[in-house]
Amino acid sequence: MPVPDAVAIAHDLEQLLGADCVLANATDIEPYLTESRGLYRGTAAAVVRPRDTPGIAAAVGYCARHGIAVVAHGGNTGLVGGSVPDGGVVISLERLNGVVDLDAADGTITVQAGVTLQRVQRAAEEVGCLFPLSLAAEGSCTIGGNVATNAGGTAVLRYGNVRALVLGLEVVLADGRVLDMLTRLRKDNAGYDLNHLFIGSEGTLGIVTAAVLKLFPRPKHVATAFVGSNDLSQVFAMFERIRGEFADSMVAFELIPRNGLELVLKHMPACVRPLSEGHNWYALVELASPSTQSELSERIEEVLAQAIEDGEVADAVLAATESQRNALWALRENLAEAQRCDGPSIKHDISLPLSSLKAFIDEATVACEAEIEGVQVCVFGHLGDGNLHFNILPQAGVDAAGFMSETARFNRIVHDRVSAIRGSIAAEHGIGILKVDELLHYKDATAIDVMRSVKLALDPKGILNPGKILKRLA
Ligand SMILES: Cc1cc2nc3c(=O)[nH]c(=O)nc-3n(C[C@H](O)[C@H](O)[C@H](O)COP(=O)(O)OP(=O)(O)OC[C@H]3O[C@@H](n4cnc5c(N)ncnc54)[C@H](O)[C@@H]3O)c2cc1C
Image (cartoon, rainbow, N blue to C red):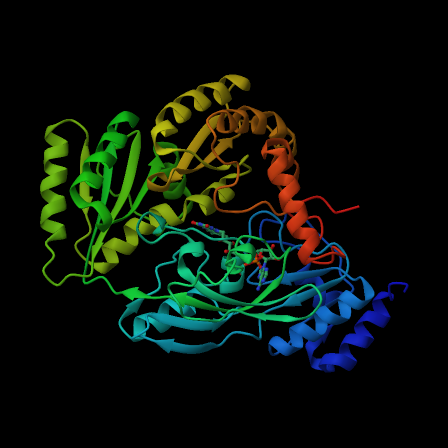
């Protein structure tokens, strides 16, 4: 059967879903063709905005019958071009934005996939619970997108990433059938756990339409410290000290370099220098406890005082109020945006065993800074999870395009080292379009074969987000 042209596709989908669910003119579909960083621009015959799961199933079923590509579109905050269409139909989840059920006794919240992360956090808060996924794009990104990218965020150390927060999913399969796995079970060994196939699959195996998520007791005590140190090995010693002292109460341990903090202070006028003097490295540390008995603030003060005496820490400040806590977090959360304001950067989102991090940072920094005179490494991120954003900032006077054309050269330097110590070249942002070749280069060939088999089994016509994660199947 020949693939219908764009006009026929829009017409058929209007018949199927109703005219108000279909966008087809160039101006209306434009916002769905690019991603937030503007790295890629796609094309699409139409955008559909169904109101419910049956509407999504009908749209996918139609595309399956005609061999038309389908791309799921959430909040469009992804950083690797995953939601950029390559022809075909964009399926926007924007109208599936409801909280379906919240059960504090079960500790679960059931939501449609287009709901924003922030809305889920707030709904949990209203009943005294916590949904712990937290990241700088939480006002716009959706639960479907979080699931599809297996998002991590700032509390992985304590609560895990999305994979650990999902109890069940509802997914529209590539042939339009609905796979309903919306249970609230904490244990279920009845065959393969299919939820996990779809988590982190970036819309290439199915379209997530709803999710049951885990809730946690809301912390009654939170202590947030911003710590300055002049030596990276001391930062790691401090991490060990705090982990030894507080174990599971440590929610976040974020690394910020001197040049990163200076960029934030330069470009974000609302941000304030947290410590009177500059230091080579900073850590943002957060501890939390659901116990009413907790003395976290007093204890972290004592631990940091001892760390200062032992020379691990040069200076530290503890947030005394919620607004001071927010101000400290703003320094971390604005890092990526401050870099963007300053100009181009070549980014690497990598994950390594904790024990290898320090040597990797030292060695890869020297190698990158020796490669082109004047470039600077700016490495920051979720140190406690072994996840670094290892970014290269340009030398003075170079134009953006000229600098970005060196990406492959720096990728090799960074990713070869990551691979040699069995790290990952994609820690939390996924593969999308950006890292398709890198994945093929570094991932074990047998693993790639198995991934292709899974793709073929679930999407034999290759209509779901083609060309993302894996190259298009021939
Ligand atoms: C400022 C900023 C900070 C960030 N910080 C972090 C961080 O600390 N940790 C972290 O892990 N990530 C971080 N991210 C990345 C973030 O996790 C993703 O951008 C987000 O999870 C994607 O959600 P979205 O709704 O915007 O998805 P989109 O950008 O719309 O889509 C992303 C991918 O998921 C697919 N998709 C979307 N919805 C569905 C669905 N319902 N079913 C199937 N597939 C779907 C798309 O096709 C695409 O491949 C950050 C991003 C930004 C912009």
